[in-house]
Length: 145
Image 1 (cartoon, rainbow, N blue to C red):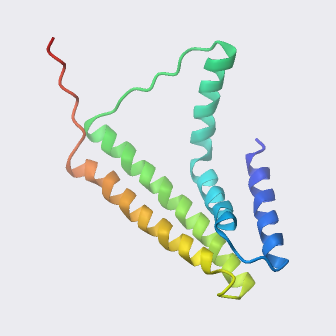
Image 2 (image 1 turned 45 degrees about the vertical axis):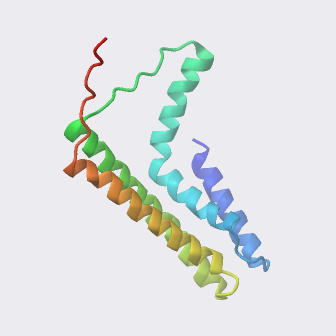
């Protein structure tokens, strides 16, 4: 429940630091990436952590991950890419607003580079994720002993 508050505090701290004259760095950019990923993947990551916390520290049932193959796996990969796209849009929007707010290209060059590199990563993720639609993951053949 505290995740949105932490996200907001991180964003405020980043903006205040930049307003005081700091030059944008990778650390400032990671704050925007974190916020985008937190919003796009937050619920999914917290649910995963909760399941494993219960297992490790409370003696709960061992989380079982069912392996997916074929069209089900392809669908999961595409869904993950769309979450990544949402994270990119959110994070890049925060970076763009900070670039505009500061209004000094020399101080925000790191943000432009982060958006570019993240864009390349997003394209690579697209190629991998959507390749499973054309070439579905096959069920492994059973070992002959």
